[in-house]
Length: 62
Image (tube, rainbow, N blue to C red; front, side, top):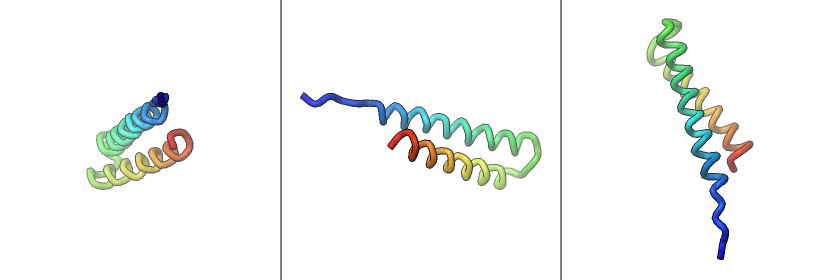
């Protein structure tokens, strides 16, 4: 019988949640403080979140 390993799935879900937190925190930090407008804040938050997801998935998940 084949042993099921959930390590990759758990890491993927964990870092996906961290990515969501980073996206929300960066957006709120830029927009709510009045530093940038809505669209610019969203673009920067998205770029940083995607970079975080790419790096963590490359290094620790897959």
